[in-house]
Image (cartoon, rainbow, N blue to C red; front, side, top):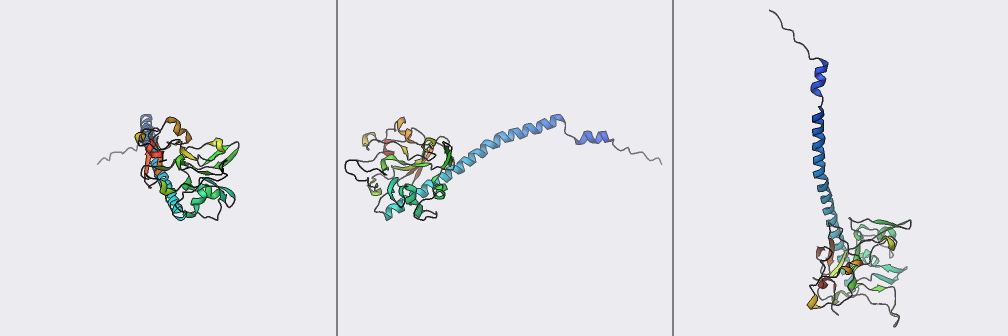
Length: 253
């Protein structure tokens, strides 16, 4: 019986079968590119959504600390600025730190001021101005509640009193704290207020939008064209520039 010879494949044939062809390689590269184009924007949206959620949490913590402060201080909100601190001038963070999970020794430190609760995760936390880097804060007040306690009244010599929380007649409509822009020209800090009011509440114009110039005070729409806002009653909403109405920021005379 004749046995047939079994010929082994030549090395050249093995190489030809195991290797990618140019067309296959280009196809794989194209598929990877398509997947990247789909996934990268999606990942960015997920990250921004997480940042927005953290920002909302920050504002809620700030609002809760403000209410606790008011409950222990005759209903007064903290002063945005004051001369009554242990080292002279203090900022509103100093009044809130004792009510937060932050080590506090009766005076602020750089580590406390850079605490993440005062900084939106979608914003830069350090800005440089004239060669000096400083930590920032990215939330500001409704200017209707803003009381600068650093400067006395030139006529009376008295410092302005703190704003009383119980004097806010429409807590569910009144904005308290919101996302603000950062201004390197201010030395790498943040912005004190998110909107400039300059008028009293008028029921006849309550639903009128605030003017574009009002937003020059510092409102930030860093969350996909919108900014987070904490209302006095504790609920949260987001707004685009142009959507804030007089009833949201103006107070009764």
